[in-house]
Length: 233
View: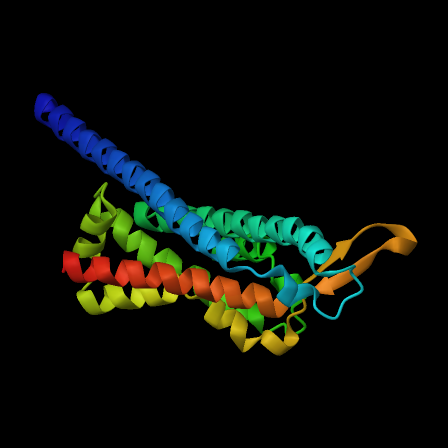
């Protein structure tokens, strides 16, 4: 009897270890793939960026000088967006993983950390943007949890196991359509950057151009992923 019980415990322990390994492997895959997708969006956004659209009408000298001054600042801002999105996805994965493992947790902890890492929230005069961001972490967390639970180490194998083709299209449209949420708050967003210091400093707003190029980058990625959905399903 003792040996049989030991064997059962050993099997359960082995199954638990295997499941944990599968979750870890799937999470690492999701991190890598999401980084690739965000890199694509940001590269497309930077390639699309036209600094003269931003600085037009501001007190910066000449077109060529304006472009040389504004371009590195805008690139720095886009990189800040990039870091923010990557940090937020790590929080989403933390939430998805604890859900997939069936561990207890306080959703408010993940929600608050997610909001703290959003670069747009402090630039928005409408506080209801928080509700949309909270919904985003919930939906993303649930979807990533479903993918993690497949144990697959291939993104498209995990997607195929976790979602129907209709759900896969919805996933692509929602998770890589953050700019559509931002457009809803366009009138209340004010993204600004400052050039110089002290009495010689000036600032310019780049909200319109930021939204335009992020939309462009996300649209480019969605087209690519929708073609992949067609191939997989």
